[in-house]
Image (cartoon, rainbow, N blue to C red; front, top):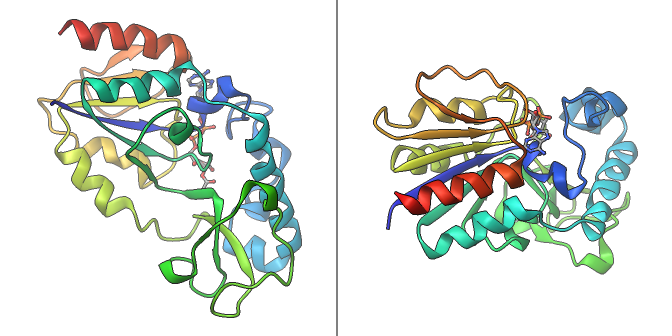
Length: 232
Ligand code: OAD
């Protein structure tokens, strides 16, 4: 089976009703990124940050995977599909994708403030207990924090993502402004002979020639692309 590698961003989940970050009216317009998505912001006001992610986490209970997520899930019948997502929601999994790498963490999980990447202290929350409070402790006795990669923090999964991208037969980019590194840099590791498709309703600047642009939303774009991939 051919290997499809898909890099997704916030636009993937826009049609499910989750706000993107950089579009006007997006999350970073409403909440200052340095307050809610940096280690400095967290140390300055942990309560504010816990509340921000508690709200995002509870939002998961009100949204569903869109057609784009579901088509990616269905493609597993025909291809070996790996999703590398910058999204912290669980909509790829709920849309039927079985191989998902979350570069920027997962809303449904919490970890230790002192050692965020120590797997012994990473815990999945049950949907009926999505609220993290001050005083809730990780296994090492430090405050539980969202399992999210904040700006200025390392992205531990980038190495495994690079290895997967290097072996892709087909590369698809969906709904990311390609502004945030190292995720955006993954495109540089796609072998030159591999076709690259980019689905986004807006123009996205990428530093690679010959990218097949599908200027549509995630669902319509994936509908068109699925047809094309199955014809080949
Ligand atoms: P952005 O908000 O920067 O970009 C969202 C992209 O989605 C834009 O290019 C939009 O045009 C596109 N878009 C909007 N509606 C769409 C639709 N219906 N279908 C397809 N695409 C659509 O989000 P990201 O690139 O994901 O990190 O941002 C990357 C990272 O920056 C995020 O993971 C987050 C953020 O700060 C952290 O929180 C650490």
